[in-house]
Image (tube, rainbow, N blue to C red; front, side, top):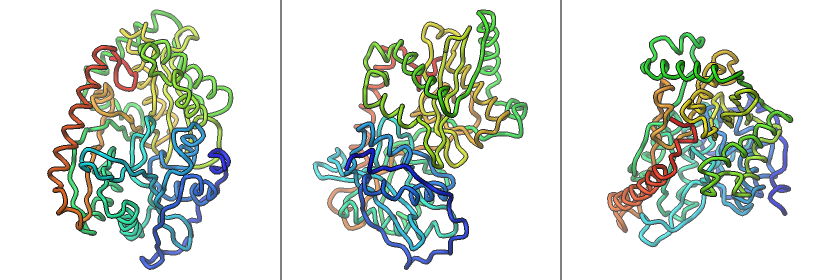
Length: 407
């Protein structure tokens, strides 16, 4: 069965009148991405019932990973079920890792387009029982081996609840590291967002750059959520990103067929609880910056931004982000913006809130004696520091900003 056929389209609204769950009603199991695709309606219902969940493990995005070859139909997925359907799921893989000292451990599924890894878990009073079943499933799915868990929002409600469930089950856990990701909660209006903003200097600088851009020609801002306009914005993104340093380095999405196929699949029109959006800032009809976003659970995740590097001095990426903030308040297309950044973002001076994102190592109690948690953490931190230094040197050589936003 092909990945595209296995992950069929479909979906329906959740049953808000579903009965309460008891712990005895819950069971965990491991299936595959291809098999789960045959449960399109149940998968979409879980995504909708998860409420505050990110979109990356929803059917729409995982299907795009499969269709582009970034995920195999055989990818294992841990699920928790009840009589009413799916209650939780987590795609994962087994891998050899430095903090496993030659032994395999488990990791949530990640790709260049996954910026959060909390499991999909149905919201509601039953969530603690569902998480307890999920944690039991984590132990069984890994064969009692540790988990190395990146990109977990540990202070968000679901992240806290997951960590509490691990603690209650006797797991040992520790943080490899964390960073503060800029997020923005919508205010009553844009004026309320500006009122008392802690970075007045940044706002003043943006207004100056907006005036300079307006002096150069006709400036327009447009958004697209489907059809030819959205498809055109995606192709425009490819061209814009490919014209800069990423194109020269061969790391632009258009340079990697699987990445381009993923973008075309995920930003294609499809039914389901995950919505898509593209925002474009143009000068005299020529795109200067394009942002691609996924919207789920009331949050818009600003997945990728590309900008015209010839106009770098005007910070077109940041000017576009400022327009998206204005549109958030004027159009209320979401309740929150998630920058989807990986640290050191220019958006720290534009957005007014932050979310703690951590990498944790979690070890079931019975395997702590083999290798201490502290030793695993030390090894993982050394690896993370080396990787961070390599990325810093690459950014310095390329002159690229975080997420392609610019200065």
